[in-house]
Image 1 (cartoon, rainbow, N blue to C red):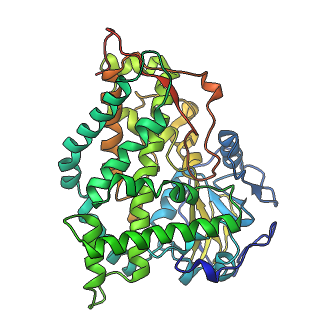
Image 2: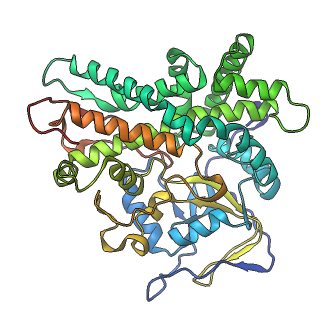
Image 3: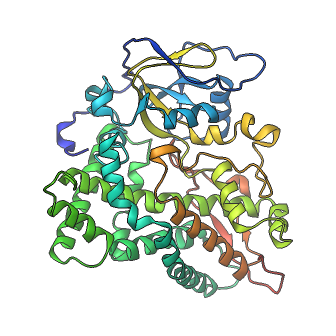
Length: 451
């Protein structure tokens, strides 16, 4: 959103939808069960606090490959069949550019608490040539070679964080999310983007606010204003004192723009927002969820110690079982889309990519789809999306998480949860997927460390 002041407040309870009609475009057939689920004409209301998201995701799957849902007053199509979702993510019949391709955009952006998700001007919402232009300018910073170059830095940061944990009194409980999962990606982002840790920590509350689906429209608008103020201050500081870092390079691309190939002011600001928010949200949540899964299922750790699985296997299974994002708003139908069960997503309506529900679909993972299994042979998932909008930061996130887990369980082979698993409280958001805190006791014994 480029100007939060131009957006009036949302009217509570108002439901927004857009619908026009054209000839339906047929999506290739998706394998479904022997009988089609009965569809309700009433949208399923998604819980903003996601208090029982697994049950909610099962209810979505029970309604078929796609179903209408109410997301904070906005009626959209939640797609949970992974094969259908994968097809839509690569289809030219679907866009992420609401300004250009969504009749309800103007009304929605002025009333919806999640307006920032559809109003940002970056590759996150770009379509076609604009998307290619914006992605091309960011891609070099996250190339496979660059990620490998960062590996020693990541290992050093992780080792320092583990030293801090080890220095605590023996047997003391510590919030691993706060003191390990969170500071790791913040430090890596600082190195990559040339931003001091203290300055990045200043973004934490406002970036967390972007993922808060319990906020009112007024609260969301205030958070957006604070977020953009912080980004403007960052741009001004780096423009005054540029360095050899990604932030300075992006600013230079804006300042030297003249052939239509650079950034606009809005694109620069929102690209920095995308890199900062996505740069730590994924890593924090996946470390959180992986540690939780391993500490609540000792058999999975035994597979690692016996060499039947690797830390890369843990990362992929965590991304499938508990992806960093439950749902990702929004995409838009450019034409009527005929679903395999005979229904249609009408042209002009919005689509919600329900990654977490899709990742546990039995069509892909059979009757054990709900089980965390690091030895699972089929590792397919959509945690990082698919197609042209596949997450550029995926290689970095995977490397960070695998490194963090390997060194954590090597240093503290008998680490344990400090509270019963049932007492862990999930984040109050329909988008992000983690815990509010992750209390552990990082016990270091003479037991055999995980490999």
